[in-house]
Length: 196
Image (cartoon, rainbow, N blue to C red):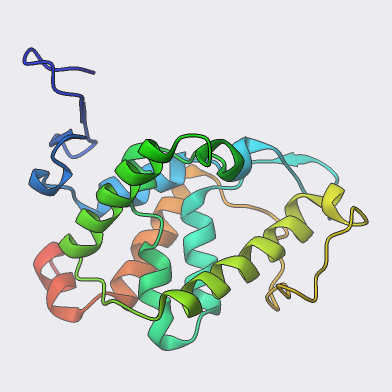
């Protein structure tokens, strides 16, 4: 949507306006992040379970939660929140995103705004990216079986010792994200956001 002033803006589920020209001014709620990521499909929705050989939908929220649960403690909360920009920008597949550097810049700005809002500590970016690549290998093994046997070198980014047998539905992905957030976010932030 574009407002009457011509500003590219969306209305979030919480009712707040989110301007892509000024994401720092937005009042984004953790529920906006959780449900936005639960609605965003990884891999443009092109997933097939290696266990059932059926097409499945796998959300960005589930990616974040599973990775956070497999992460060492210092990376868990940053990993949970590392795709926060996609809650408002959507998940554009990497090969396509590479063709649109302006989009990548905007997404990173939206992400930085959310990370600041939710007090996500800065961590070793190399370690966080390594975990993300291991999660990607896990997802490709379990949800993109066509990768197997096509020159994929699993030794480069060893899959995590988890299996994605049955991806979660929309509500479950959002609720698991919120549950994980309550466990990992700074306690004073959780107390501010939720009536305990």
